[in-house]
Image: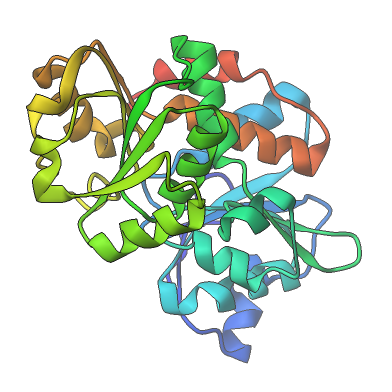
Length: 307
């Protein structure tokens, strides 16, 4: 287990913990006066969450530590339990752990129960761990508030069928999208998500290699992990209209291939999900500290920094 130091933007490579590990691992030390928080993912080195929460804490005058923990899928549950057993108060969860985060929690918010995935974990006063989901609400807040895009009565293409796509799909339907088309490299997963949405009159699936035969879309949402994994994302330009808005749930370099494709294809606008990240992080911060940060101010500061 390599450690770059807990405070700020620590990256912890996790494996199954032995008793000896628990004596030395930074997040398994006895609880200190400063509350500890973290983001779990794999990979997670790219995450802006530590920087985000540091900005929120400075803005709100809250004393806290926030790190990043890289846990492989097979070690995620073990790493999370160790984190909470030894001083952790709350955690954000990113790819590929959102379903696993839901599964390991003791209690679930209504939003998380509906989705079956979670992006935020909170240690309750009685020692139980609560799973919540605010991804969908964060996406809508960014789309509406910063870009003036309302999904109501729009034709929407959703790329991907994982945990992030699931949250986006429910949110888009709740927001009144006329029709939602789901495309995934593995068609069975797209069909499973469509079935879970239970709205056959508004939801359909499309084979990835048949997207060029679909009607054009008003909104295209990329919820795949292709950018994070540096994988190619090949899409037909024919599904774009002059008013199409393209939105990637990722941000920074991970979103660049999709955003560049959207710009080349002639979309009216294309954006990454940095604003969504800020909104979801702010909701988590408010859940843990009872203070809602000024998200616009923090987003402006992040945009001025190299990502």
